[in-house]
Length: 525
Image (cartoon, one colour):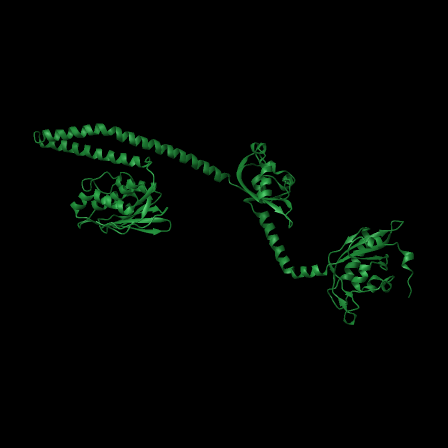
């Protein structure tokens, strides 16, 4: 069978064939080869005269032994679309095995191609030729095949991410283009900001900012910072669709391609209005409480200070009456005068303790490094008379150097040791002071062998003026442990007691560890 000379039938396609990389074939509408590029001949190890004028699939047969070879069917379907649409048809990567003379027995070689089939029109606007432009992508396809599992996993991951982003209701998650206009919009964004995706996509980010921020150029500044630094985070007021304001935590991140070129931005934001309102309410309460505490301290100081002078006068004159007229009147008069003297003395002591308590909150004495051993010894010395009268024994383990107000630590030790001596049982008081390090604080303990107490009163005893016993049995104003609690809290610590009736009590308090706090020398007495 002979074929007419292609030079008489077809235009010269050489300029086209040389204009782009890849292989080219020119076909007649009945799929006979009328022109072929040198690259095609080289790729298939064929000679031009062997294939010109032949049917495409006769010249380049598909592999009948490979059921996965789909080149013939896919190409025929593509040609049909070219004739139907009279337009180029781009094919996905397809497997098309070609016969190579150098293969054993003239067998087939597996190749992958990216192909565009384009029509060439004749004078009557009919398709005169079809140009096949194919590029061999076998190497890329094999790499792609090797990564099929990874791509599938990535696709599943992306789908989960998409569902996550679209389904999150507490976060506004959306994309912006390089100019700051909205590209995507999730359900959380609609719930928080009030816009539907149809209303907001394509709109600038400035729409979410209040007028004062727009005037300062804040929206553009946020994007500029994200572009320069990769990410920017900010809290501030934003505007909903209905014009209402909400306090938002906003994170904007620059999105770039593999060559570091800016593609746009992602934004994730939360509505923190309730938290902001709670913080403002808390700040208001703190200010009111601080003002109330200041006024209360001033009142307590002024009241106790101003009461001191008239109380001294009452005490002095009642004591004078007792001295001068005791025994000169009847027994009832002596008893009444004794009550008056005792009441005035107790009142004076109560006011002094109240004055001390009120001064704790206003004392501006600085915190310094204090050796607890030395301070404890001074407290025991101050209690020496009571210690001797009760035959008390006070011992201690090595105690740390702490960051504290020395005078207040002295008062703390003195009150706790004095309290242990006061509430001793039938045996002489035995008191032991210890301390151990726990995490970021020192835990002090003051243990005694006294009368103990019911655990249900463990909190009550630290309340000012609260007492568990009458003054005739255990004298005092009921303010000593309240002072201890206030001192410990001023040092940012905690205080509590563990006790059982008749089994003594152990008072614990903590002081945070700061600086070079360390164990000092033991002090015993």
